[in-house]
Length: 149
Image 1 (tube, one colour):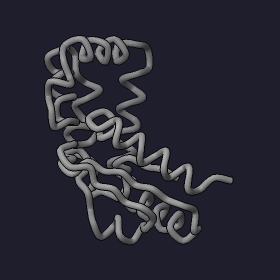
Image 2 (spheres, one colour; image 1 turned 90 degrees about the horizontal axis):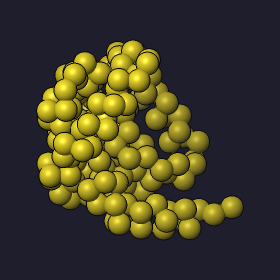
Image 3 (cartoon, helix red, strand yellow; image 1 turned 90 degrees about the vertical axis):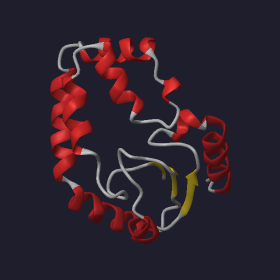
Image 4 (cartoon, one colour; image 1 turned 135 degrees about the vertical axis):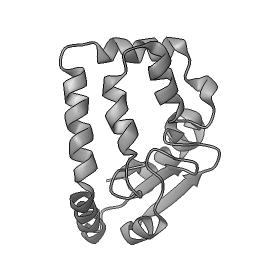
């Protein structure tokens, strides 16, 4: 099991982000929200913001995100229980986290209790797989290689 900044192992997902993202109506608002996900804001320009806005405009998208956000905001205890069950299962685990994640800040005690391999990527936020794609891909490939079959 490989996870990137998973809910339930952090100190809680930013409720304002969950609330505001599905309500965004213009590219500038979307871009401001997307820039909260990364350390280098230049990664989230107008073109990406417009693509996200196009996706939000599809029927059912906003409603689905509202539902996910409201459920996620209430599910912390259940997520912790699930994390404990996974940890007790003995399944190989890899967790990758951005050191500067402000959307779902790292909780070291939860992460330590979860066990497995942990890699904190410096100079990245909630999207280390975007900001440090090569490093994250190498971690994933190495993990999968070590746990084949």
